[in-house]
Image 1 (cartoon, rainbow, N blue to C red):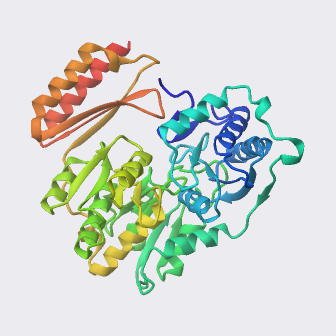
Image 2 (cartoon, helix red, strand yellow):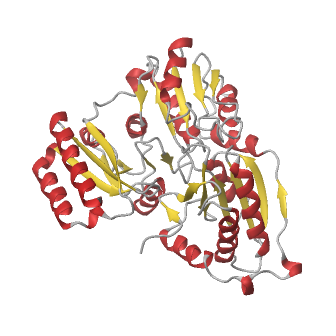
Image 3 (cartoon, rainbow, N blue to C red):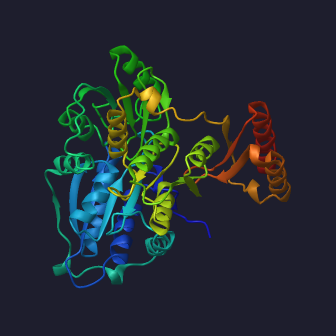
Length: 448
């Protein structure tokens, strides 16, 4: 059964429209509070947010929901998503909540939930919460003398900065490096520049003036052109772009050339393998990672495990199979020795450590393989389900078989939009483009 509220990464939608309304947010707080209200201790939830205008509205509605079922609420204000995961653990909270729509524009918003271990919730727990959202919870409300209490907590930015810095050796300094950091006018706008400055870097900041409306607008990981131009302008050694909630990062080298999550993982994996820091000889990625990464790692004697799209699936596979490095091509990098979820700043710091240790320019450190040509397109479904069409399924199977070891095809329904994502990659770019054209035409016809 398809989820009604939860998608690939929590609950997401247009602000002040279902499912991102005050009413539903309050019910999410009530439902999640009931699910995690176990034992006789005083229960607590920590709630963070990004810089969207609507985050204030959702924050207050969630707070009311949690308080009504007897959960105390700790409010952090703007903080990166991985900061909430970290605080959930360090403050011994029963759960954590991040209000953010990540890389989406300001008029979207979302709700991400973390368990007491700082990890995103399983499908089973999300289903349990979903069932309660639409249920009558009047008889589950707390008694008047058992209502929760809410308060804001101070020093969250300093806590997160110190946590991020401690992922590096104390002896490592970034002195002499000029770093451009683009914070997407989002949740990392305070902590990321300060952390880099405290480590000794000369910092040039972009996207650090949020106004409630400009998150991800022509800045951040989804608009790396701004970062690349600034790197070339100031002749920086590296540029780092976070997304709106700072759980992902992309990089540009000293020439302004884009480096995606696949190249970042290749650089860190190679360095960690040389130092004996990989817990297992390989990494975990999603089905979207480039085949070129897989071939590169194989040449280094390292394996690659693929999961469904979404960093929570990567994190789950890492926990189950014992890997300590994984992530997504989009820049969600999970370093489980330090984090339980994607962390853009920590991933960037680990990459900077590799660059510093090797003493080479970023263009050499982070361009370790040539990605195979990859074509990605989306097909609007209009509420239809073209992937259930037998002819379409057979066409996908036949095309995959025709590519053999020279490429692959991935066709999947988006977890955040009513679209079908079509991706193909292979050694021959013309063949790949033709395959995607044919698939898009077939899916569009089936959805008509």
